Amino acid sequence: MSTKVNPNDATKANDWRLKLFGDELRMNTMTKMKRGDIEQALQEVSFASIPDAFDGYEYLALFFGANYCPFCKDFAPTVVAAAPAFAAKKTKVIFVSNDRDDLNYEESCKKVQGIDVMGYDLSKTAQMRDLFGLKTIPALIILQNKDFEKDEPFVVSNAREILELDPNLKRFPWGSIEKRQAAPLTAWDRLFIHGIHGNWWQLGHKNVSPLHPSQMYMDEHAVRIRAGLLNVITWVAIMNVFYMRNLLLVNVIFGIVSWEFVTSMLFGLTPFAPLGIIATLVAVVLQPSPLWKPANPKRFAWGVGLMLALSCFIIVQFKDEISEKDFKAAVAAIALTCNLFTWLESAAGFCVGCFVYNNVFVKYLGKEECKECKL
Image (cartoon, rainbow, N blue to C red; front, top):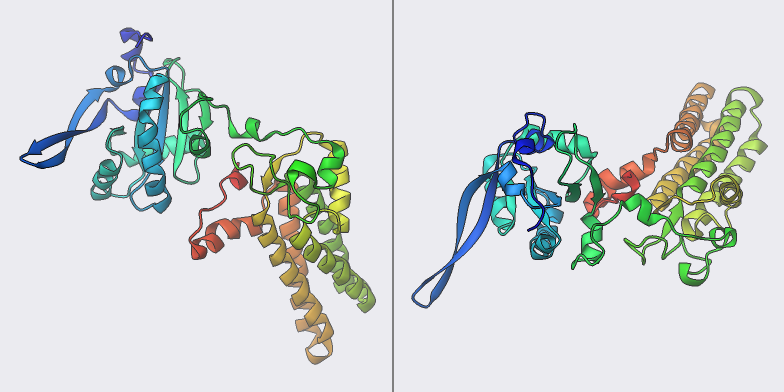
């Protein structure tokens, strides 16, 4: 390879590669031996200094995985198969173990034979996760192998999903997921789903993310604006519980909120959800570039909101059967919970329902959690 690393730079104490990886890299190769008619694969383990192991490479591809992670096991063959293509692009592939003990670390090394492995060091692995902002595995982080004197490397992208779409690395080096998500849409396209983006009755837009063109997405700007509008309604509900005590207003609020949640769960923010339409119009005016996020976690979150609204409505209908103190406490608790949830999403961009979807719901279904929701 033509790219050369200055040995003087490589031995500097402030070389970010030494800080991240330590002094040595495990060369995780496989040798085939034939005994009679039987061919056996033997694992060969050797070590090389970090400067020597990385010499000549322009990029580093760090595969974060663990033996306990089923999705890592599924992704590992893809990374191993792509190793020759990475090498042709002057990219060194390294497995970074997130295993909890030495035994599982060795098992992981067997599953990624053909690519080299960082030494088992939980503290350095945790340091890397914090540096790159990783919350889930598997992950594939692409770094530039240069500027060793800086405090940290330049991150090109998190290519976990991109590698599966471009296994031959035709578009390598890849840009970031955030940049690749941007898709030009007109105001009408954002208000009314049609054409290449799907049909009007769909939950969200298709063909707005090159990572998952067939999946449906929503504009996060509109979702947060809508959450702000719902937050205003929860304040009215709270005022009604403690001061106005108007039963008709309770029914009106429940009718608006329930219609909003049901229609948005079935058809998305438009064309039947009134607050969704208003939020999308405001987003078109204030945010010309949509921020696309997966739609399915939002449907789950709005289902939670509908259940809270329904619970409040049922309690109100039976208010004569319970004491006034218990009635106020129950209704206020639900209204305050809705108020907190909508405030968190509108002001902080944190969707409680999406958090539950990722950390509880998908685990029971055995599905992979939504990573783009965390970007």
